[in-house]
Length: 115
Image (tube, rainbow, N blue to C red; front, side):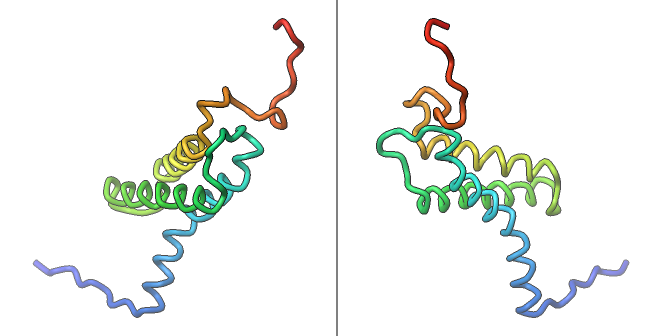
């Protein structure tokens, strides 16, 4: 029985793999932190965009690592769906959106009074 050999990877290849693994989390976290205030009205004391981006990124990387652990490979659509859900959830929590009652007036159409 032959033992599988691990391929040797140089530092540049390793950094390339790590960067490509982390890129979806950085992009989705940045988009949710940037677009979040226009979609959901932030409450008083909500996180600013920088800390919100870091929180979204941490949640996204944790979800992607969990996906690699569960599926034994990277790039599953279930991992990416969980990434979007995790970033949206941390955005909602960071904006304290449960205190404002929902969407921002810029994103939602105004309803007439009495309805």
